[in-house]
Image 1 (cartoon, rainbow, N blue to C red):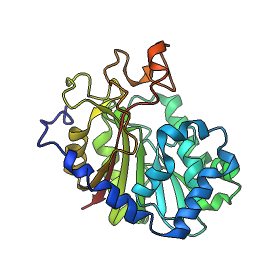
Image 2: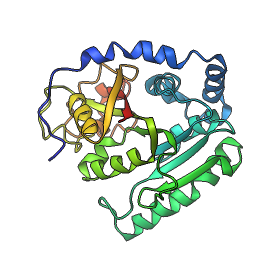
Image 3: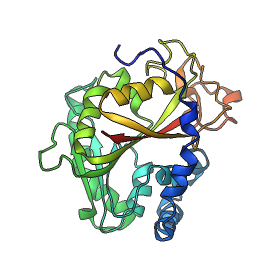
Length: 277
C-alpha cells in the first residue's frame, strides 16, 4: 500500500514550533472573541461534553481559521465541527461541507445516493443549527468540483477521517481534489487518531482507526503539501493505541464496553497543519 512508507527521521521537533504558530493565529482579539462565542453558543449544548477531548477552540486557532474565510469540512457527518464552524464563520466567510466522491470507496448505490443527498441538504441543515442564512453554507461532493471552485478555499479540514480514506483506498484521490480547491498557500488541517511510532503495518493501515504520524506527514507531503507545524493539542498519553478492535473501543464509541477504557478520555490524536505547495 502506498501509505506504508518507511519512516524518516522523527518529526517530534516540528511540534515545538506549534505553540508559537497557534499563538500567532490567535493574536486577533475580534477573532478570539468570535471563536469563544461560537464555542459557547447554546446550539452546542449537546456537543459540549466532548470539548475537553476535542479542544475545538485551540484546534481552530492552530489551523489559523479566520471568520472571513472559505472553509471546507470533509465528511461533516453528524455536524459536531459544523456547528462550531457554522457559528464562527461570519457573513464574509463560507462553510462548505465536502462529501466523499460517491462512486469511490465501498459505497453501494443506496449509500452513493445518500452521500449526494447529504451534500444537497448541508446548507439548510447548518442553517437550522445556527440560525444563519443557508446562503452562508454549501455542500459539495468531490466528484462535482468545477474549475470555478478550484483555488477558492482558504482552508480544508479533515477531522478524524483519514483512516477511513486510507482503508477505502481513496486518500490520494480525495486529497488531490482538496488540494485543487485550496488557494495558493491555502492550508489543510488534519486531526487523526495516532498509532504508536513502532506500531506494525497491519495495525497502522487505517483498519484499526489509527495511523502513524510520520507516515501521514510523508503521505500528505507527497501529494503536494508541506508540513507547517504539528501540535499536541489533541494528544492523550493515556491511550495505549493497541486495542484489538481498534479505536472504536475508546470513548465515546466504547464498542467492546471495556471498563478500564471508559476513564481514559478519547483517543490520542495528531494535529497537523499543511500548506499547499
